Image 1 (cartoon, helix red, strand yellow):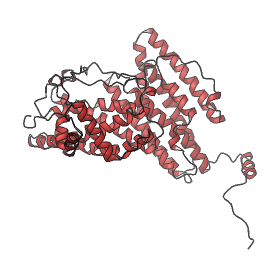
Image 2: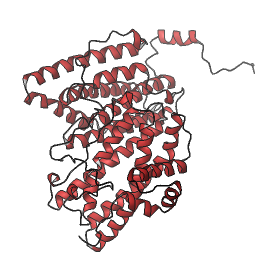
Image 3: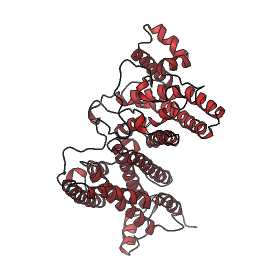
Image 4: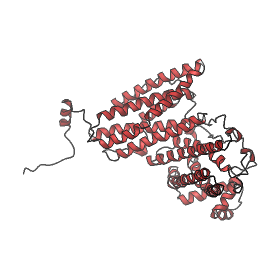
Length: 457
């Protein structure tokens, strides 16, 4: 037997010769991986755009649909990520989206109004799914069947997403001439940006060498506006400084003296979702698993709001009878203090959500006693989600603080966040008092938020 030296590195002249004989129509594993990486980062940017526009859009139904589609884009990204982990090559995921893709998609999302954004969003969806179809047609049904299976899953939501986004963009036709003209101008701009982006991607052009068209607006309405828009059907609560406990002000809800107040509390979780929109859009350089968890958390909060609104309406109430919280940030998202997102996330996952368990558990028990099975099951599903969110907080909170050179354990983060809440409430004056209250978690929650009237239906 002739001895020979084997190598995993193929001779480049041999490969070039094969391509010259028109054999480049076959995709090697590294070729599939290259295309999937591009698609995955495009999906990530579309998830950022959808979540980022959620606070900017006033219509409640549009908010909930953007949350759903932001989550779908994130899940598409996860399907591709899972397949990429089986293929050759590296992702460098902590570096985030490649600059070319980030620049192009941010340009195509920074519209002056919602109608224009949806016009661009519908266009990009059609282009992206055409890219998926082009790849699918090149896959070998046996060699790359695992990739084909992932693409089949991603294709499930395609028609619904495109139809909805296209329908939203048609709202411009019912508005004034200026709006219609701007939507048309925006569509032209997005088309040119997409073509330049695709050309640069194919040719390997550096993002700094691209001559982008002049952006149509210097005052985009989204994504992530400094103040979220509320649907007129959801009246804004004007904060009363005299009430420091959450939901203490009787002006918030006519159900304050009833266990049904739990449904109102759920309805207001659209505010938590909007906080997480800023969080998802603004946090950079984290592992992709962080964004998978954050997207699930965000979508859950929207689902909780939906179930609260639905149950209130089933009981004969309208959202106009209640007050809702308007989310805002102190400055443009790029100018926020380094600790803003870690502090916000730890407050949500170490205080607000854990303290909700007591009310939700008691509410579920009493709803069963009152014979209201649907309300009881609402609370039970809510608790399942909230427990997972607390686990997310313990996992990612310390990593976020590590990013700002503030190393801290999950336990230390929890205690510090709760101590900060006590200081805001003015409920303790010495470090010893703070430590004592924190040790008694039900007592801490009793100071932070109100109890419900569990015995009154």
